[in-house]
Length: 320
Image (cartoon, rainbow, N blue to C red; front, side):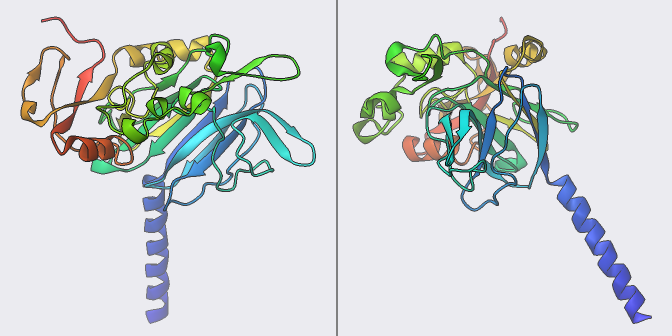
């Protein structure tokens, strides 16, 4: 009887492992609402497995879904104006692999980035859309959850078309027809430490918003605009799936308008104020943890000496 019992235990264990895997994984649905084909790329963070595929083609109107393991971190973007001659190359977001798949290489700036840390501090997912490396396409990240809205679980992204409005000194144009195809960050364009938050400008106290970062922030208030733009740019959910939409259509933008308006955002506040009501910001301080370990928590701990905490406050504070 020992053999049947062992087989039964093995089957039960496999079923439990499969159930656990399904419970702790997420699904990314990547949708192209642009008028042209795009070529999404995916880069996993250090210590997390590469997803499959790491690059693919997505025609206008198409969607595809990818299963993402628990505790995965990484970034996702779209390559544009790609061609296959002797090797595969793209005018924006190229990962330099020479093939359709990026195979562990990241996007060459400028490119709009979606960044994720799943099952991070407090069991929450942390995500953002970043324009720190510049911009090439509008992007919207929309969480889909059935288990409530733990954290500030709302849509994030940049839904504005910025390539035409981009300052001339930051514009990337296609040589053949002069089409505006991307918008560089000031750091990429000029390499100046004040724009790159490097050297003497490597702390939140010394690296401040500039007219160039404010161009991005004013157009896309729910996206990172420069390296220390943590407070209004990092979002959290619990056990969610995510829809990543490139060039969201008017109907997609309208569907998420309420989420953008009523969103809660992470802010940095003095620890001494924990537990007090923030009449200026319209929210109650909630503690000094549950932050984005790879960005917000790192900046908070390293640059504030423990004097700052992470709080949640609505974007539109109530009247009192």
